[in-house]
Amino acid sequence: MADNVSLDQYLDKAVKHYSSLFKLPSYKSILILLFMFCLSSGVLSTLVFISSPIGVAYGLFIGLALFFVILLVDYLFTSFYVKRRSNL
Image 1 (cartoon, rainbow, N blue to C red):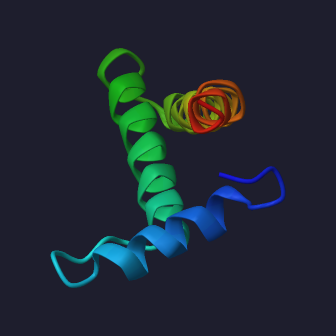
Image 2 (image 1 turned 180 degrees about the vertical axis):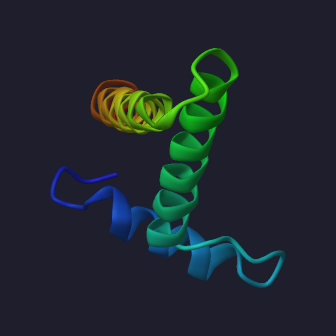
């Protein structure tokens, strides 16, 4: 993968290449689903312990933090591991 090709373009090329075998979701829909999953799991896990409106606020904060941690780890993995593997 070239340095100037973004992850979004790389996934779009993969979608076009493998579309005859199966349908991959777009990068945007993956991010939307990940965001909804993180928020809902944060709220639900917090409401188990704090069942009040402040629990919902804490849950949203935990969900957002989880989402951004996942994005950061994905970015670091893509930056270091995938680019290093593509140079081999």
